Length: 128
Image 1 (tube, one colour):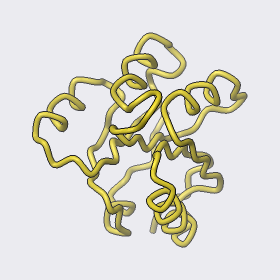
Image 2 (cartoon, one colour):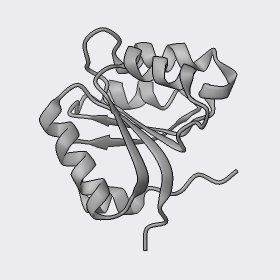
Image 3 (spheres, helix red, strand yellow):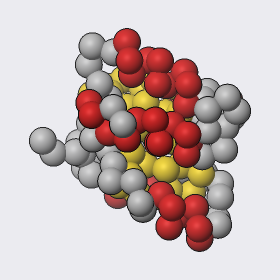
């Protein structure tokens, strides 16, 4: 049984992928609130204005304006954001991307698209 999260951010530039992932999360009651952003800059802006931070981030790597790597670099230097558990969600099968993602302390997983119910079931609710 999945334990429902209160809030997650889905940072993904492809509208179809966003729709599919959000629908999957809603179908399985993964989170009570799923906020979507089409690039890292939008998500960073939302984080900076947020009163309550998300429990998890799902982050695409290849996006316009601010890609996943730039977003990760930026939040590493902001203490309240650098601890938010982040799952890389990408179509990249490049082993160097996976290795690079492991150098960020807040990256807790690397998932390849399309996201499946099995992927969601392996995600652990963050503990304080």
